[in-house]
Amino acid sequence: MSDIEIPESHPRYQSLLTRHRIEEGVENGITSKQGLIAQGRGEAFDYLLGERTIPSADEAERVAAAYLLLADHPVISVNGNVAALCPEEMVELAEAVGADLEVNLFNRTDERMEAIVSHLREHGAEEVKGLTADGRIPGLDHERAKVDSDGIGSADVVVVPLEDGDRAEALGEMGKTELVIDLNPMSRSAQTATVPIVDNVIRALPNMTKHARDLNGASREELEAIIDAFDAEAALEAAERAIRGGDID
Ligand code: ATP
Image 1 (cartoon, rainbow, N blue to C red):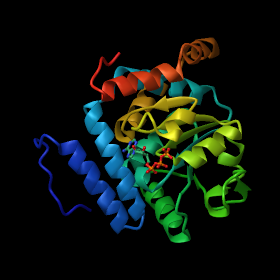
Image 2 (cartoon, rainbow, N blue to C red):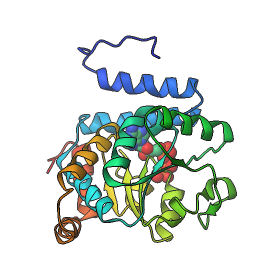
Image 3 (cartoon, helix red, strand yellow):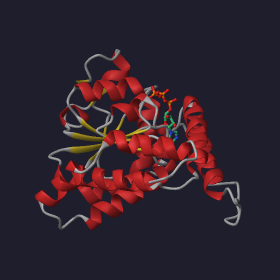
Image 4 (cartoon, rainbow, N blue to C red):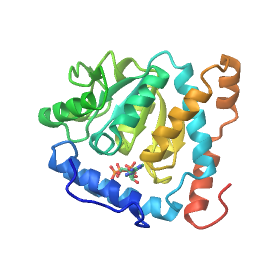
C-alpha cells in the first residue's frame, strides 16, 4: 500500500504518517484536495497542543462515550479525511457502541462516495450508509444537505469529526446531539457542539472506544451523571489555554 518508509524513531513519526495517509487518500479518490488544506490546519493546531490528548479532551471523549451508550440511534459521520486516516478505528467505535456509519461529504461525488464505502468495507464495516441520500438537512444547499433518512436523518446522537461549520450548525438546529472532533476550539463546529472534542481524530476515536468499553456495564444513572458534570464551554476554554501555552487542566 505504502511506498514510503517512515522510521518509527523519527520525532515526527505520527505527524508524517498522518500526512502520508491523507496523500494516499487523495491518490485513491477517497480524500478531496480540499481535504489536504483541512489536514494542514489540523496539523498546526495539533502542533500547538503538543500532539497529545489534553486532559479536558480525554474527559470529553469519556462524555461522548456516555452519550453514545445512552443513544437510541447513534450515527458516526465519515468524511474523506477520516476515512483515509482511521477507517478501522471508526469501525471499532461503531461496533463498541452499536452505531451506524454514514458517509457524508462536503464535496459529494458518486465516485468518492463509493470509494469511501468500499474502503470502509475493506476495513471491516458491514453496513455503510450514505448512498441512499433520501433525507435532507434543512437550511443547506442541495448537495450538502443529503443524508440517509434512516441514518443521520433519524439519529439522535451524531459523531461529527472534522465537520464544516455550516453543516454542524444545521445539524444542531435539527436537535441532534453533536459530538464534534475538531482540533480547532474556535471553529464553528466546535463552538456548536454538545460535546466539543479538541483532539486529533486519530487519538480521539480509539480513546472514545476505550471509554465506551470501560463504561459498558455502567447504569443509565451513572452515564447521565457523567454527562451532567460536563461543561462544554469550560472544555473549549481549557483547549484554548493549552494552545496559548497556559495550564492544561
Ligand atoms: P468552521 O467550522 O470554522 O467553519 P471550516 O469549515 O473552515 O471550519 P475546514 O477548513 O473544513 O473547517 O477544516 C476542518 C477542521 O478540521 C479544521 O478546524 C481543522 O483544525 C480540523 N482538523 C483537520 N484535521 C484534523 C484531525 N486529524 N483531527 C481533528 N481535527 C482536524
